[in-house]
Amino acid sequence: MNMHSADATTAEEAIAIQETLDSDMATEVAMQDTLLTPRFYTTDFEELDAIDVSGIRDEWDQLIDRMVSDPNKGHFKKNQDWDTVDWDGMEPKLKKEFIDFLISSCTAEFSGCVLYKEMKRRGSNKDITQLFQLMARDEARHAGFINDALREAGVAVNLGFLTQKKKYTYFRPKFIYYATYLSEKIGYARYITIFRHLEENPQYRFHPIFKWFEEWCNDEFAHGEAFALLMKTDPKLTKGINVWWIKFFLTAVYSTMYIRDHQRPAFHQALGVDPDWYAHEVFTKTSKLTQQIFPITLDIDNPRWAAGLDRLRRANVDLAIAKKEGRKLAQFGASVRAGLAFVGLYTIPSKKHKVPSVTRMEPAY
Image 1 (tube, helix red, strand yellow):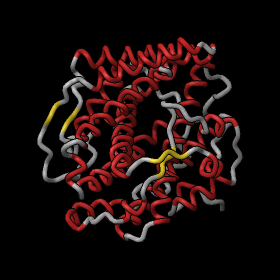
Image 2 (image 1 turned 90 degrees about the horizontal axis):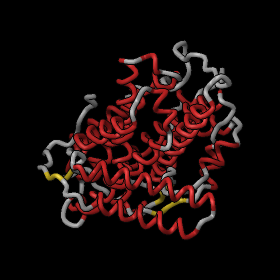
Image 3 (image 1 turned 180 degrees about the horizontal axis):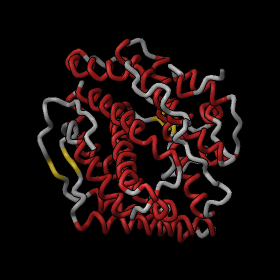
Image 4 (image 1 turned 90 degrees about the vertical axis):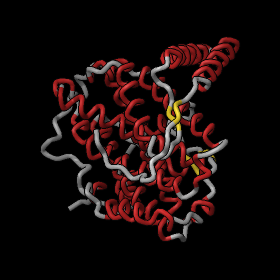
């Protein structure tokens, strides 16, 4: 019997299984490097390896025990609940946007897998290497499951090729913490919002992969918990000048999501979701979740917030058109407008709160 990546116990096993399957066009899309596409990261692994979790041992062991129990082993594969998808009959614009969504999601999941797997390989700190091995396992399963869905459409991402050929961006460990923590938490908020919406409105579930979103987002939630605890080991990471860095990453991650989602109108229409409503729902959930470790949240109800996001979106649209048409001056103008819009968002006063003494949370949405 052939093994499936959902049953793999390590990231290496899951990747090896996927590498036996062919791919092409999707890999080219996944290889792209723009401000809006998922990136591959590298960092100072020695600094990560030096982390001491003894001060948060109780919370740490609870999280690790949950991840070791592997509640989602064998879950991320097709079963009797996987409906037949009429890819040939799918509306062309929806098909294009949905495939783009799947490729982007697969690349983002695998980006985490690559980073976590490398930390496991390079480190000697048992606590840290165990955590990253477990997270790499989960992300490899997610990426493999998305690839299964893509393969039905006649495309798939060559994960092994991406590992070797995609450009890597260096981030200092603290920036990895901020960016990855937010990526995992906003991923949870995105998936659970779609899942709950489709629970109430199943007529909009145009593809079976959405049925798997609840367990999927629970993995994302656990990974976010891990990075919250990593930040808790060094209180300086959430104080002083670093609060400005936290605000920068909050603004950047929220803005990127908003722009990317508005590039997929047919996808959101098929889901029966208004992108503006969806963005506010996700931002609200993420802001609530990040109060566990971040001392600030963005004021997403400030009138300047929605207006600033729209200015940033329109500038990005104009920039893409100018690039396609080769108009350098127009590109410069749109880039300046985008930069000013981002600065406007960043300068909105943030909301401060007291960080709770207990960091660990469980999924509640």
